[in-house]
Image 1 (cartoon, rainbow, N blue to C red):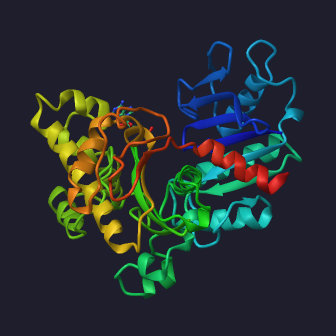
Image 2 (cartoon, helix red, strand yellow):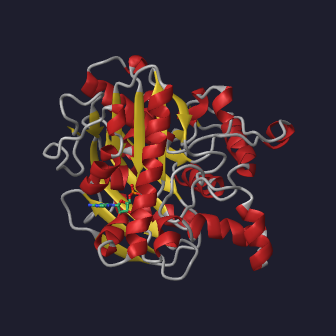
Length: 396
Ligand code: AMP
């Protein structure tokens, strides 16, 4: 059974075609600049050369049309016809309180995703465009929505209600939702396998550290608390996002700089984080390269590291026991020095990293010493595979 996984951004569309018999990726690609001049597809069928298709794409429907053409192309395609795609799995950012699990998409589900545009005005509209394009171009093929927020719907009320007047939760659904749920869930399942424990018996601290970053405390296999909040802006310092901030800073800057809410949103989401601190880059590799000569690049890394440590410490201290701490995503999987310095500052918890075991990139591996108070692992995340697995489960 082949499953097409689709992840739509406002001007982009990422896709993977996965053969679920052996969980092999058959083809993958990225469409960029949809609706903007210079749109293009980078398509790769595994085992064949990558191709670049440059063609005007006025909307997501046209982009998907070209993606489907690429997948079935005689020379660089992966399948002979679209009949070989049995289901489509869509990443949908915000399921609000409507979805605690993935669902097969029907009219009612579409209405609920549309209703959640209010809490995710930037993220849900492109996801909806992707679903609509598939419905038109792949009539009769079942489609599944997999939500970034769903895994975190198990958080207890005390961890998701903000200390605002309660009426704002009732009127506007302002609460912590949490994101990266597909990744935290995937990592939880993989960690349970490595620990040889049933998934509903594992207590973990899962650290998804990439361009966007979040940490989740997982109790009995379920999300108990997480660092991202009403939007993916809260919590850790990220590539370009502030993470936690004294909220009083926001009206202060708006007043001083004569900014409107839109400008402020851009500042908080796109111009801050390690980019804002360093003035060098939002990319951790660039920061590591610049750190020896640029004080602010080192400072950005130090602040990022301190925040990760603070949340690991907070979650560790509030859980009955911890079976494992997991590092994943771009930085978590690849930055040997970042993992080392995060854990070095947690000696008081009895956590110890083994330098030799930690000398690993992008591979599942134990990286703690045998006498560490709990095992620490690197586990590569795979959100596309998780989406495909959930889609298979609901449509087989
Ligand atoms: P992601 O959002 O998960 O794709 O992660 C992207 C981030 O991972 C970028 O900031 C990259 O610089 C970072 N990253 C990837 N490889 C490495 C590496 N070898 N060392 C440090 N950071 C890395």
